[in-house]
Each structure stands twice: as C-alpha cells, then as structure tokens.
Image 1 (cartoon, rainbow, N blue to C red):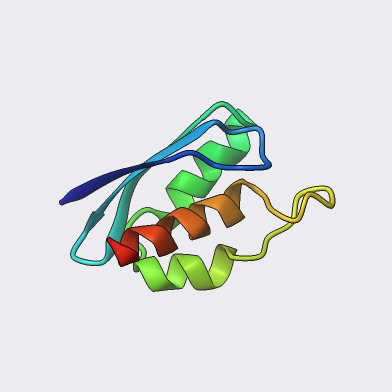
Image 2: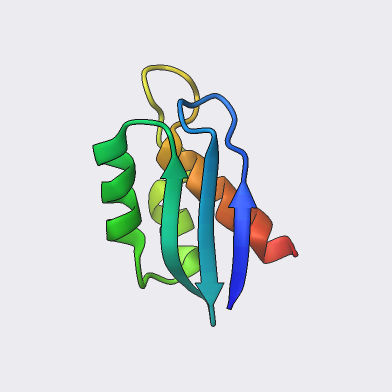
Length: 83
C-alpha cells in the first residue's frame, strides 16, 4: 500500500492524504475545506479504481475557481500514477 500527501491549490483544503492499494483508492482525508463535503468525497471514492475516480471528478469547478476539492483529488491521483 502506498501513502500519498498532496497540497491542493485554489481551494479551501490545505492537504489531501490518501492511500492506493493495487489501483484502489483508500482512506482519503482532507485537511480543512467544507468538512461535510470532503468527508462525503472520501466516502464515495473509497474502494474505487484510481482511473474511475479521476474520470468522475476531474474538471469539477467550485464557484468559478477553475478547480474544486474533487478536482484537486483527481489531480493528486494523476500525480500518484506518475510516481
């Protein structure tokens, strides 16, 4: 199991921690941000394939920011695939 920490940009969250085991997303935790929403995101993606999470969340826009916490998670997952 690989553990990752990502520092999101352009959103209220300041850190995203997650694990990947055999291509499956596990234990997603956001630091700060909209607590209920970030907990919901973590619960919804738990057990999903990395590529499916990226496909579903990438490009989600929050109030015209051009990004969002879900989009930042997708970006973090993309970076994890490069490592």
